[in-house]
Length: 80
Image (tube, rainbow, N blue to C red; front, side):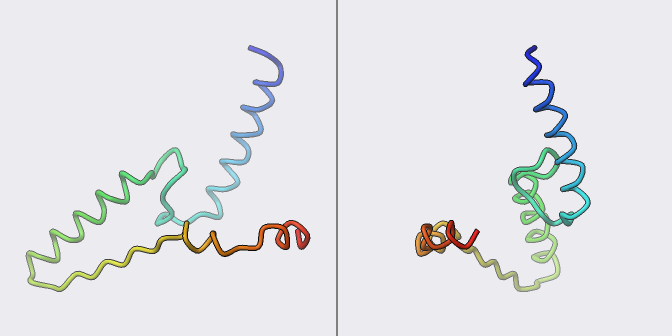
């Protein structure tokens, strides 16, 4: 293993442990524990349990990709 790979693994581990302190348990995606499959499973269980008690279930999906299409990336880079 190259030295750069070792350094990369160390940095990645440190960043992951710090990020876990700031991210809530409801934050899914791009994480080692808690991916989109977990979010889908949680949604399914909540849906089924609410149906048992004849409760209404509302789901809202937001397409963030479309929102990011409207960003002026040149201006954002200038600001950053």
